[in-house]
Amino acid sequence: MIYSIGIVAGLPSLVLIGLLFFLQFTEYKPALIEPVPVNGKGKPLQADKTDFSFLTWNIGYAGLGCGMDYFFDGGSMVRSGKAEMEKCFQGICRELKSSDTIDFMYIQEADRDCKRTYRLDQQSGLEAVLPEYCSAFALNYVVKFIPVPFSEPIGKVIAGLCTFSRYTPESNERHAYDAYFYWPKRLLWLKRCFICSTFTVCGGKQLILVNLHNSAYDETGELRRKELDILQAYLQREYQKGNYIVIGGDWNMNPKEFDQKKINSGDKTFSIQYSLDDNFMPGWKAVYDPLLPTNRNLDAPYQKGKTGTTIIDFFVISPNVTVLNCFTADKGFANSDHNPVFAKFRLQTGNQEGTLSF
View (cartoon, rainbow, N blue to C red):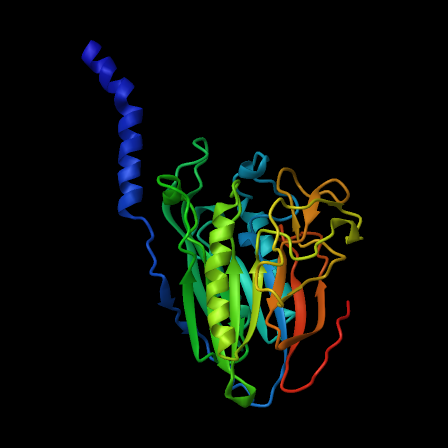
């Protein structure tokens, strides 16, 4: 009897040990730099083209629409219902289809095979509504089974970020942020990265697009600092070659010179403890719309004027790139906990000056 009780009492420990072994054995371990295959077929890039349009949008895997909260951010929900998720994804597809004259789209949080989105292959779905674009998809979240919350485990996750381009890139690479949470937390967490897409443009120089999704839930700021150091080293190398560079995505921090008081959407606003400061790529410009938020809190469903909002989605451009315009589209966080950000840039080929407008 005592022996049987001991076995039963020890089962939770055995299950935990077994789960850790399983997660360790199946851990996603990407190389520091990996080529990213191109899907679809874009068109050639004209050698004399200097003006390019961009969109960056964290689509929140179509699972974080305005009626959703999230348990890890102070809410109670783990995933939305299937019908609601499909509705949000259809809304995201419509928005992107209506913007299909944009040259480049930076997309974050697209699911490929996840329990939380009912196994919907969102990458294929996005490619289907953007048939004239090339796409490059890089994994940043691969876990065979996430056991939390115990009452309703997140389960399997295979997800990442994607760059869509109307032009055929010469190369795409996944660059790992070699900065992770400590074991065993890292077994359940993202392996973050950025995608670099390269094009030959005016004067034989290269235009380098960088699509990123940096760390959140980093209380000490250690991961954020390491990621920025890795990114900065790459940018410095490429800029020294005379290349044009446009970085965009979900930075999970406020941009340079962010002032929450300038947001005039009627939303409640807040600042993040960690922000992009002048020590990151001095002389480079952070480009964003200061008047509208790009991200909302997930502690409760979205309510205008009550839900906290801020700006964490933006672009950074090298000094040889000029801003023509930038604006955030206020979608009321209907289909994602982020709003899309649009911008247009000009590559400087001489003494050119651009004008910033909203």
